Length: 310
Ligand SMILES: Nc1ncnc2c1ncn2[C@@H]1O[C@H](COP(=O)(O)OP(=O)(O)OP(=O)(O)O)[C@@H](O)[C@H]1O
Ligand SMILES: [Mg+2]
Image 1 (tube, rainbow, N blue to C red):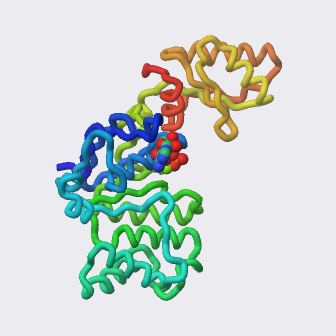
Image 2 (cartoon, rainbow, N blue to C red):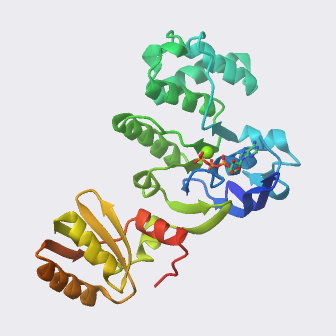
Image 3 (cartoon, rainbow, N blue to C red):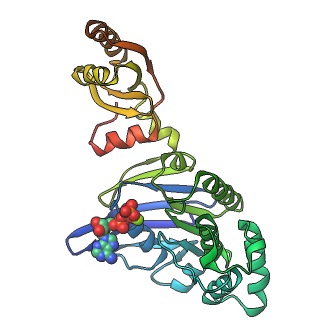
């Protein structure tokens, strides 16, 4: 049984269709990444999944409990870390957790051992007496995670949990998530980072309220197999212009120190040959032209432009 089952979720705000017929199934031990541009509907999806908002249509089941019919049971299985979560700055780390434990209805004799256990888990055990307002950004994020986990949920929703967090802290946060997955928790995470999405078991790419595509990172990347060329050399602008003029190059983007070209299916060798010839004629130095494995970003940008698979 999937721990998260959402069918045909739909939500409008006035004439904005924020979530449009979205269905989602996530099993225990799975982590599902919702990726998409600003305003795609990721946060609204999370709010519908956690019951903070009612859908216009559709339904949600968490660990088998229907969120509309058995909201208390369903929410008891759920931890939610909102995109902008709030802690009580003047309360200590431990007092904050006590508050969240009480909201979650943890019995008095359980909140303290459970809080200590969860603070140990997220690496905040030595900061129990520090006021929340004095924590670093990454520590606040960990306290937010601890608050979401204080009642042992089997379903965890994380809305951009690593936004604005440094790479080292992000890495630590992921180690925690991986441990939760091993315990059988089902996780949905929204993230703007493609490297994070590619660490997930499945990825759904959202735009304008709809899931444009869904699959394992490997499945998604294979949609553009053989259709991405990396080009290095100089002058950069000349090479870029040459690439744009090629009839079988669909898109040109800078990726660090190289250009990524998206090609029409099956055109790799022809394009490489033409680029070399054109560069020679223009007096440009084409150091390298090679096929590269497409990344999630390549596929998503193509999907946004409505490019069919090839
Ligand atoms: N409470 C609300 N009232 C009116 N419109 C809303 C509300 N919440 C969201 N929207 C609109 O719904 C759409 C989806 O917003 P949502 O916050 O779900 O996007 P998102 O994918 O989370 O974006 P971001 O990456 O910026 O967090 C946007 O057009 C937004 O303006
Ligand atoms: Mg959002």
